Length: 301
Image (cartoon, rainbow, N blue to C red; front, side, top):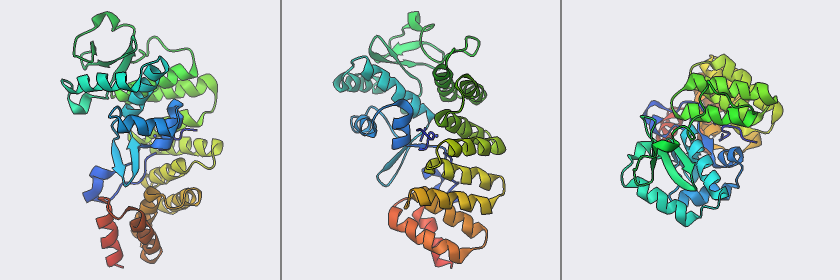
C-alpha cells in the first residue's frame, strides 16, 4: 500500500546536514508510494514526469520524490486520464497553464472539469488553462469543505489531501482521522496522518501512526525510515537506529535510510559504526548535495 506517502510515498526521513537542506526528502513520497496511493502503475508517474505533466518536489540520483501537493496533482491527472483525456490533451493544457501561472503555484490546486485541466486560485476562483475564470464551477470543485463532510473513508482522505495542499494542516489531520474512523485501519491513511502530525511537531502521535502502518505493512521501508525520523525528534536515537536498520533490511541500499542511520550514529558518538554506512551511502549517491557532508564525516573518523 501507500506508505506516504512511503515515498503517499508521505515519510519524514531525517534532516540532512545543514548545508543540504534544499535537497531534503523528509516527508516526501517516492514514485512507488505515490503510484500506489492514487492507484496507477509507477510507469504512469514516470510518463507524466517525462511529458512535463508532473513536477517532482525533489530528485536524488534517479529517484523522484513528491509532496502532498504533487499527490493531489497526480490524482487530478489520474481522474482526467480515467475520463478519457489523452496525454496530448493533458500536455497541451499544462503548456497553456505555464504561460500565465507562476511555477510555484502551477500544481498547487489542479482540478478536473469537463475533461480539462483547471486550477483553483488563491482567491477561490476556478480558472481554465488559459486563465479564464470559471466562477460557475466554484461550488462544485476543489477542496471538500469541513462543514459538509464526505460520507466515505475515501472522501475523507481526499478532503485531507485537499486541506493539506491548501495549507490547512489542522483540517488535514481532522479529515485523515475521520477516514480511519469511517473505514478502520488503513496503511495509506495512517501514513498520511503520520506525515502531517510529524510536520506539525506532534512527534509522539506521528510515531504511533507510523507504528500502525508497520503493523499493517511490516515490510514498509518508508514507514520504518519515517519512524526513525520522529524517534530522533523525540530524542530516542538508539530506537531510531533500529528503525533505520529495519528499513535497510527491507530495502538494502536505500539512500535516505543509509544517510539517516549514519548521521544518527555519528550524533551518538558511534563514529566507527557510522563509517560503513557513510561509505555505502556514497556508493549509492555520490553526486547528491548530501554527499559532501558524508565525505567530511568520513574524513573526520
